[in-house]
Image 1 (cartoon, rainbow, N blue to C red):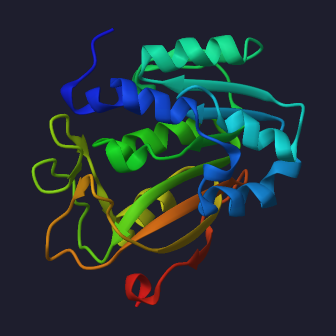
Image 2 (image 1 turned 60 degrees about the vertical axis):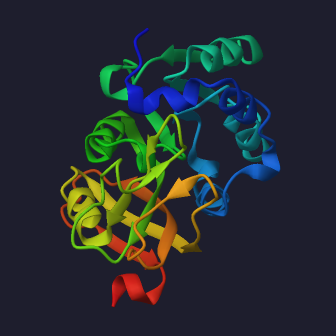
Amino acid sequence: MSIDEHYRRWTEADCVRRFAEKGVGEFFETERRFLTRIMPDVSSVLDVGCASGRLLELLHQYKPDLAFDGIDIVPDSIERAKQLYPASRFWCGNALGIDPGRTYDLVNATGVCQHEPRFEDLIRRMWSWSSRHLLFDVKLARLDRHLVDIDRSYSGETQRLYFIIASLPGLLATLKALPEVGRIAAYGYVTKPNKHTTVPADLGDFVSAGFLLDRVPGAVAPEIALELPDFLTA
């Protein structure tokens, strides 16, 4: 499978190993916060950017018996996932070009949108696969438009990944336009780039934020509940 240059960092051995060894305690606060609320209603999950499928270990803490499928762009990770979780279905490729052929109670994407230059298209596609909930995370800053520039904001050195900083007004406009979205909730906190990440010097603070969308048939105008730092919403 051919992988675009700006995705190749995911295929390097240290990156594959890090996600393969990810423990339950390493999942983000934004994930746990929303999963605690919705998992009693969830019987099926599609994990976009699933790596070796380790999210299932966390989900089993909420519900031991559920249907779990995954998509990831890295062949080695998908082969490992198939070995670890033979009852699940896994697809290798970019989710923008895959059709799982069904819907799920929850579609999850952790650590994906901030590295995907077409992340708004991905959100729309994932929403089409969700019958109840969509959970994803992004980076936010006080911006008029999304920062999608691999020369100015990136992770890695020899193999660069996009490090996308979203504009809250722009993202909310995209989410509000989704069909039947009845509630948009967000929770986030100020964070710092790690030593492998470069961002513009004048960016200011940015926020790691999780978003949970709930589908409500017939909904026209969503309820919006944002727990985000004041400088983003003022």
